[in-house]
Image 1 (cartoon, rainbow, N blue to C red):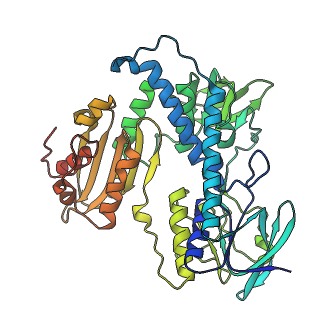
Image 2 (image 1 turned 30 degrees about the vertical axis):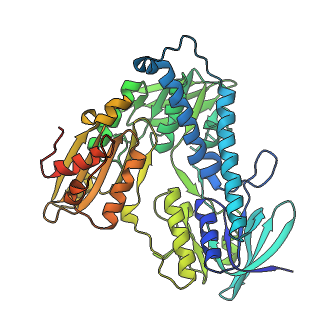
Image 3 (image 1 turned 180 degrees about the vertical axis):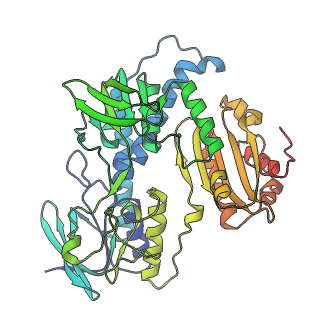
Amino acid sequence: MSKQFDVIVIGGGPGGYIAAIRAAQLGFSTACVDEWKNANDGPAPGGTCTNVGCIPSKALLQSSEHFEHAGHSFADHGIDIKEMTLNLPQMLARKDTVIKQNNEGILYLLKKNKVTFFHGRGSFVKGDANGYEIKVAGKTEESISAKHIILATGSNARALPGADFDEKLILSNTGALTIGAVPKKLGVIGAGVIGLEMGSVWRRLGAEVTVLEALPALLSAVDDQIAKEAAKLFAKQGLNISLGVKIGAITAGKKDVSVEYTDAKGEAKKAVFDKLIISIGRTPNTTGLNAEGIGLQLDERGFINVDGDCKTNLANVWAVGDVVRGPMLAHKAEEEGVAVAERIAGQHGHVNFNTIPWVIYTSPEIAWVGKTEQQLKAEGVAYKAGTFPFLANGRARALGDTAGMVKFLADAKSDEILGVHIIGPMASELISEAVVAMEFRASAEDIARICHAHPSLSEATKEAALAVDKRSLNF
């Protein structure tokens, strides 16, 4: 007999488990279905983000940055290290521990909020507006039912035709996080967030990294001024980035991978790598949902069709996160999950796509919210810009991390903040002030008038806001 719930969430990633918790907080009997497994075949909720994405990549970025600092910059601080070796197995083990802690934390949160967890793959059996039956295929098969279904099934790495992931030589983000020995030569196809972050990790640990990008400009979604600064800094670090390339044949041998490509000048080239990471985007994951059988509409790219409220074409079936339109960001999925749970409860859940922050966790970090300068120009919006370099920030000097800047874009007439762009130390944390300011439709003058602690990196934010009106005080 089918177990009855008010809400069933399929997927336990950031969008799914957060939606389940919020639904339970609102008084609904709630189930969450997720099939991720740990090394012991036990449940490992958290989705791509926790298991093979955001969390483990940040763990390795932190560890590899410590390694690079110890080898190159500690001496400036009066710390001399005569002999230093890399214990890669320990570094990877620490990363796995961080993953496990997050898995267990999510299971605890679900239990604390009285969400019933089912470990297995969820799929539609039948249903209509009155309720849907979901099959959970795990170690045993179970049947559960609910009036409302929230789909949060996430996304998968996109493969290149003819170069399927074997996670040994040709790697997705999954394999890139588990390389057992530092490769001498590492190739990365795609200079997006994943490519740059993973390329940075292995470069710091000693690999010679070559990044091949099809687009003619680096980080085309980033503000041009910030992207150019990033390109200069990455090149200085030793990341070899080739833009405007056209990838040809990819051939995996016994111990290496060869990549044939045409460079921006039209010259045919061939490179041989010990490992190859392919990071050319992600595809929505609807495999096994029985979407066709239930009549769930997908668009031409495989995303679940939803309206502005995350409603699908099926009554009382909702979808959030990577499996629907919009940026593939964990925090976007979380906001949609909360909003959908509140809409089911008759409340007015809200997600403002204009104030969703973006972060690239390279060194220096890159973070932004709102419009870029090129977008404002294309839209014909009159604006003012102000920048402030971390080189002139006292805390950045004390940290020994002065690369980059903060950039404000404000409406030329009203002074309302239209976008904030940061490249530099702790940009991922600094961007939150800009998000709050934009949510309250603050002006650059508002930020310029707020007292910021001294010495702090946040003073660079204040100074960039002052620079909008050409009255920066420390530069």
